[in-house]
Length: 597
Image 1 (cartoon, helix red, strand yellow):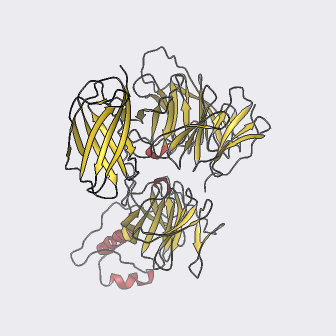
Image 2 (cartoon, rainbow, N blue to C red):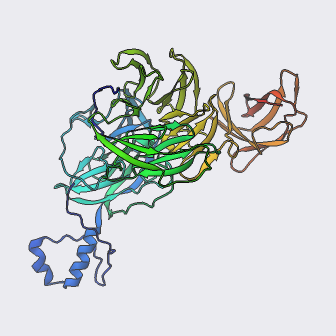
Image 3 (cartoon, rainbow, N blue to C red):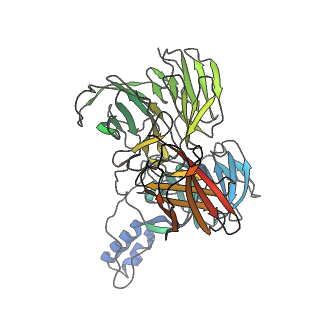
């Protein structure tokens, strides 16, 4: 039975377009660049120049459009939704995820901050006072060239429109005619430095010379000078996965999607990392295709996808006992149904348009929903939807899943970690580490639990997925191409010194601190001050002895320390000591490891 819940609306210029592929021509008499020919002056112009020269000038003029030249990048935000220039030359940033408005200087200095719940769009009055604005009126142009528009900005010659999923800034004149685009898509994850990744808002300085671009996905803003340049082509296609927020599993299968491309992938588990069996869907208007994907669900022989206000059903046949092989025709489209409530995540016949994710109990009598805006998850009865319980304490929850024992897993996009709660809402475990390395995560979203208890998480901010053991230990990272596993890429150990002034990371070689085998440690130290020396040692406090070797630690050219001659000769509990000397104080950081016999 489906619950009739209220739908929510989705996220927030047909013009003359002429593509000229001939580059600007430098003429023998002068450079043909930036010349504007008023129609009434053409006859006069012909008296001085020949027709060929006029064509060269027109071509050069058409390929030159408003463009941005990168100046600087300011990091350190959680999710900037809008940034505006202030009359004094500073910048006001609405950090939606941090619930604050921050004033920064163009060189990145943080000047002040004001707590505001969920600020989205800003304005400034004639006195320079910043306020949260609503219902801003803008021209309603048909901008077919833009995949998904963000918050635009007007300047003296027209409009700049950020294309969130097109990873670029589009330029239009005041009449809505498209002039070109700039801001090449970042090909490497989190690249920045002039490469744009999901730009969601722009603003132009009062003098019209500079542009600030928000990239909420990356937690940063970039500043450009506004000038004239060539319209930039589409970036090269890479094999980097662009997984969306949703994931589901059944048996030995995992279902993931790339909403920007309309592609859905069916992965098979059982090897070191899940391997894609097939891809289906695709971007388009056909019944089996998608322009966007809001939710997905996988069950025995049935796949359901929500996209564009449609519930689309696919069927497949899979035998987990058959040998592994890729099967392009494995999934077949069955039907598409249209309904206004088909806008959110799905689980079987249940959908919740206003939620980031949902998880239905095994008896179908209750459902957990994620309210990202209110920063909480709630348990409600079905079908009357009476709220029974709420869990708070998140920066922004995203994905939710129920484990076999009834515990609840919730991903926190803002904190970049996963939290496990008991059925009563008690916090049992927090795991996950913010970052971009294979064992780390950035803005985790959807969660699913495999039959063996393995936890699969969409590492949305890093465009990939992660596998964790039931106790929260990282196991593997995978996308459509490259993958990492714990065996091949063991994560470094990270500890903070006992006095809290230093952070220590160490990676053992050849593997994760072996038993009765000599190994090396490479150690990095972060903190305020200069490290004069580092001493590394280990001991078994329960047995009252240390190592039988005397390790040697030396400083490397890259700033790390290498310790050779480490030997943990007995099974059991060991303590690893890092004694950091800054010339005045020796401070200890301590790690722990238990070796099995």
